[in-house]
Each structure stands twice: as structure tokens, then as C-alpha cells.
Amino acid sequence: MHLVDMHCHLDLMANGPAVAAQAATVGLGILNAGVTPDAFRAARAAYANAPTARCAAGLHPWWIDDGRCGAADVDLLVEELARTPFVGEVGLDFAARHRASAPAQTEAFERIAKACADHPLPKRLLTIHAVHAASTVLDILERYDLTRSAACIIHWFSGTSDELARARRLGCLFSVNEFMLATRRGREYARQIPTDRLLFETDLPSHDGPGSAAELMASLERTLATVAALKRTEPFTLANEVCAHSCELLDLHGATPEPTPTETAAPSTNEAV
Ligand code: MN
Image (cartoon, rainbow, N blue to C red; front, side, top):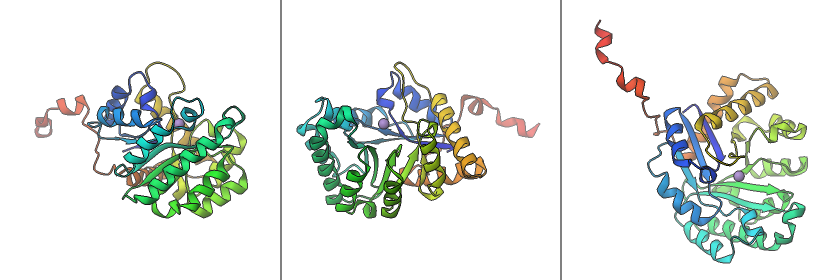
């Protein structure tokens, strides 16, 4: 594995299964963040044979906010979490345009956190959306002591410095993408986050239509280059450390890239010539 995208949305690409197949051939690991429990169930079937893709079961706060999902979807997800270790995208978004649904979002996230606490599973991991809501997210993680029993990854952290310090004290991890690195504050946070708490992600797609593993890889490479420069470290060393941690979290160590057609076609008799 060369790089791992710890938060992307294959489900929202026109050609997710093709992207997952390409990813396996280029040594790209992917955590597919589901936005609804139904999307997770479909994804689990669609990516069952993709050796470097893993699927998380989630319920994105925007889907609660606009009424596309409700209590029945929270029930479905809670039921799923008794047997599914990877969770997300879940979380809270209290930005002005989503704030009206803050109580419903909070109730859902609290039920999801409780389900994780009630069903501790090996490799439990959450990829968490927290926009203008980092303190409330951390309150809930703390209430259920989730950072002890799970890898709690705040995706695209955008809270205050105090909230970052609190999240670090609680033991959260942080997945960083190039949109976050486009702001001065995001770059400063990425510089401060210790490498053993740092993961890379794309949060793609950001456009309609087909995606590609090359696009994900290019975005991760840009994130890697920027973070390495901020930390004044070698990209190769940083990539290895972050990738090893990601593979451990996603249980990707046994998932070797499939041989490329060129390698398969290479005649073994060449060595004897
Ligand atoms: Mn996302």
C-alpha cells in the first residue's frame, strides 16, 4: 500500500466500483464513508471484492438536516453497528444553514455513540464530521468514553485551537485533506497534530460524474507534500508512517495490490536468458 484515503465517498461517484478496482492496482487504500445506512448496505455488496476498500456505516448530519433521513434510519444504523466496526460519516454540523436541525442531529449522534459504546468491536473506528460543533461532538465522545474503545477520527478538523487541544487530550485522530490545507488555520493545525495522530483523506468527490483512483492519489500526494513541508520532514518517511497507521486501522495489511496486467504478462523465462 502506498497511500490510504481515510475518508472518501465512492458511493457518490458515478463509477465507484471502477474506482475501487483501480485503487487496488495502484496500492491505494480507501475508507468509503457511507452517508446513509442504506448506502452502506449497498456499498458492502458493491465493494465486497475490492481488496483495498473498506466500508463504513454512517448517517451524515446533512441527510438528517434536510429530512432525507429520520429516526428509522438511526434505528437501522444502530442495529448495523452491533456487527460493523467502521462507522461514518457521522457527526454534527451546526453551521447556520444546518442549525435548525441541531437537536435532531445531536439525538442521532448520541444514539450512534451509545451503540458503539454498547457494542465494543475490535477495529472500531469512527470518521466524524464536526462543523461549528467540535465541543458538542467531544462532549458526546467523552460521555461514552469512546476514545478509549475506538479510533475516533475527526475528519477535516475546523474547530478552535482550544477544541483541537481538547480533542488531542481525549485521544482523537485527525484526517487532513487538501481543502483544509487551503486555509492558514488548517495548515497550522496540520503542522501541530503529531504524526501518530495524523491521517490523510480526500473527502472526494467534489464534482458530479465519474471519479478515478488517479484523482484520489493525486489529492493525497498534494496533501502529503504540503504536510511534509509544514512539518519539515521527508515526504517518504511521513507517507510510510501515516500509511502504516492507516493500514493497521483498516486491517489492510493482508490486502496486497493485484498484479498489473504488465506484470502478469511478463515472461518468467526472461531471468534465464
Ligand atoms: Mn465526507
